[in-house]
Every structure is written in C-alpha cells, then in structure tokens.
Length: 388
Image (cartoon, rainbow, N blue to C red):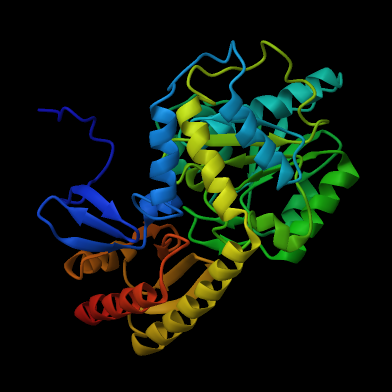
C-alpha cells in the first residue's frame, strides 16, 4: 500500500520537532548538530530570533494579497536585491525550481523580441536546476530525465569545466549559457574564477546571455553574497532561492533591464510569489547576510572549518580523499559511499548531506560558532573511525 506521503524520498527514520541555531532536536529529544541546514537553506540556523520576529510581526498584519496589488514587503526585498547585486529588477518566486522556469522563459522571450531564432541553452554535466520538466531538461542527467519525456527541447549539455567543448558549441545562434558557479548536487565542484571570466567573455563575443544558478551557492554561502563575485563578473540573469528565505519558502530571479525587457505585464505570474510573509523574512535575511562584517565572519569560520577538515582527511585516508568547495559550502570527497558516512553520522548525532561524485556535503548555518565547528569535526572523526 502506498504511503499517504508520496514516496519520492528515501527518508531517514528521524523526525525533528524543534531547532536551536545549528542544532535540530528530534521528537525523542536527541540533539543533532546540523551540517545540512535543510540543504543550504537555514543560513542563520534554526529558529533564528531575528527571522522569528520578522515573521511574527508580519503574521499579525497580513499574510497574503494578490500580485494584482502593490506589496510593500516585496518591493523592499526587491530593492535590497538590486542594491546589493548586478541586477536592475527582480521577480520573487517560491522556490529555486520556479526561478529556473522563469529564467528559461526570460531567455526565450528576450530572443523572440529581438526577432532572432535563438533557443539553444548550453548547460553542463552535473548541473541541478530543479525538478520541473524544464529544469530536468536543462540538467540532461539520465537519472533525472528517464521516464519523463518528451522533455522541453533546446538544451545541450556539455562536460563540466570543459572550456574547449564550450568554445566549440557556442555560436551566434546560442541563446544562453546556464551554470552554477559552484555545483552543489553535482558534488561541491567550484568553477575556477578564470573559467567563469572566459565564459562571460565567450557569451559577450557571441551575444549570448549568461545565466547563473546561485540557488545553493548564493546568499553568503561561499563567503561572498554571491559566488560569481569572486571572478569579478556579472551575469545577465541569476536564480536565487534556498538561503534567501532562511527556511521560509522563497526564491527570486534577478536580471538586468536589458535581459528582462521582454517580461512585460501578462508574461509571467505567481499566486504566492512575493507574498508579504515570505518577503518580510527575506528582507531580514538580506539585511543580515549582505553585511560586510557578517561575510567576513563567514570567511573566517570557513578557513577554520577547512583547516580542521584537512586534518580529518589526513587522519582517515581510507575514508576521505580530499576537501573541496568554498566558504561554508564544503565537500569531503569520499573513498567510501557518502551515504555510509551520512549514516555513521546519525549514530554520532550529526546531520550531513550526500552528493554526486562520491562527495559528502557540509553546509552548516553561516553563523555556526567556533566551538560547534570543533564539535562537528570531532563527530565526523568518530563517524569515520566507525567505518575504518
């Protein structure tokens, strides 16, 4: 008999009823140190007082109104996103997948209005842009697309990090290049800054749009507000979600005025997107995370965490191969199945997340303490020892 919850996940036998900062508390009272953060979502930890206050204050006023009306909280969030990024405009969504769908529509509408037949979007192996039919078509991954065809046409998947393949594929008929500056689901794989600069230059040369998916690597996760800032370039369109809501369902598409020119009244919409509750929380997240002092602390903690993880790899060469990633978006390349490490972590009351390329993801809240980092590595050490 099928479960009442559609069984699309292989769930661990743990349920949580409360959270405090970097800790998730199970229904039996067990405290777990959370290095998953809801997969890079809880950037300020569980039950953050600032976010609880913002949500509670807004909940006592008004929860939802249609986008047929002006929404001051939405305008505030859009103002903050534009102020702190390359963008001239923003559309607020409920999720990263919704952001990806709008980005695809925006690309196609842009070229349609230019009177040019440019529909091909170049993407990369290992990418994850969501689970809608358009988003899985963009990923090109066999395990995601199998059984869901026919898929949206117009995508071409290239080998990750292969600039020669990109140079051979891109042309004056290319609509856009879409990629994650740091692949998350793909195994915490950062694209070198020099490569990102070359991709921007190739897009400029051929007139193609550059679309960045910073759903997982954005919102301070890498030590900059957005990961592409390290390369000193800007995209034309960017997808944002996960951390922007600090745990509340929220996403956004950011764009230049030029790239967004075709998205006029009636071309896109959302019933819940930009609602006052979500935007009140998102604006507070932006006020905290976009602060230079906050981001400096993320980088300091990231250096400490990485140093400790390098020691962990050296201590368990049969379990771990290397550390990779940027900021507090870190991965342990494993010599065993990462799911085995995840399960061993449960026994140590530690939460981690597996990824592709035999990688264990470590995505703690950005305000994790030094002592919690020390404790996290100690628990990882015990988990690894149990697998030796």
